[in-house]
Image (tube, rainbow, N blue to C red; front, side):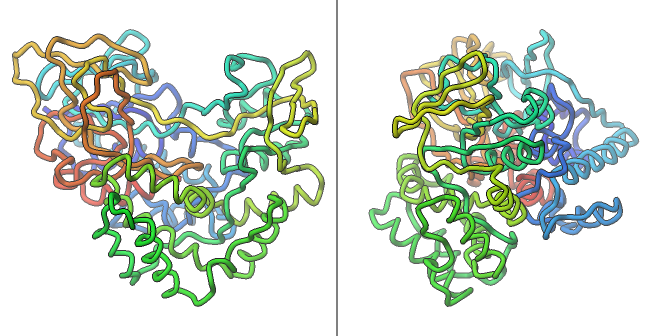
Length: 516
């Protein structure tokens, strides 16, 4: 009997459920999420929130790439300069889930949504998991799929110990809750300058507030006018032959990327991006470049990711982390670039003096009766009525107190024999749970990218032994074939992608297209 528990009901979780129903090999599917179906990224109803992906990439089905476009057209909803509204993508996902739930019911498969949070996942015996919920109940499952994404807000060090202060919003999502907490006409400081902060600025300015964005880097994302998969870039396939441990990896990767870019356009990369030190002027210049279609780098980004996703899990984690540090600017600005509609709105807000982009980081943040007092790094002081934290999110983690466990997403290990008495538990979101005497890692923790509007996927690695309680990232990079554990009957999978050799057809592409 196949009973699947899918943790979280965002776009990835919905995609997982739809593909399980389409494959037709499950008797029961339990979707666990305390919030309504749709998640934070796509469940927000605000019509000013624009997807960072092109409308043509939102289909849940690899073999039906126009499914979302057909839905958008039939429902009479339009995109914005080729970018869809997130609310439209959310309604599409919910509608397809509803249709497939009806299909499952007719086929005798039960699909239900449990409004609770997961506190731990306990492996009791082969093909048996106990998913314990915060309401005291539990879900029994033969397979567990973790589709959590990035939900916990990252708190800047200046706000340590102040998360419950009045006048502080820890995350801009969902936006109705953020707006409800802020008095009309407020002076709002948004901590962050990446896509969550861009969303915050757009929504707050439209609501009549005066907004200041600040971050230590004073660095906004680059601007792009489209997101496309470009065929025929064979140069990029050479990435598969590289090793992250190669001392020349940085130069080799750069050479491959530059040669692929030259195959698209003769325009030098330095002429495709602004080098202005002031973030406001840099935004204006790069918005102009996007309007003039002088940014061919944007036609390379998806193809680069297509090559990196399967490559990263086979590399050592320290080497990948070093490589990420070398390419931090590229990763943040180009792979995490903002859509042209968002850039145009920010430029308009700058012109109307409703938005200010600070070039100095905040040194200290102190609450007072009327709001917050900010001390800037240059010694100046300024008061704000409200602070919105939009500094990104942290990845959820598996935590196990056993000493002989892995410190990263583990490769598959044999499940304990039935009746052996072995019991393993995996605490969810850093909550520790007792573990049995012969605890082992999950039968399979396949990994895949969990992106947000802010961040690219994080790389995973092969297991290593740790003497402390390790934190296992719930989502990292696409699994290598030996990580997929496709024929094992009992699995814990992270990130929402079934193993390549046994999962529903097209699930990799469908999962990818369901992400922001």
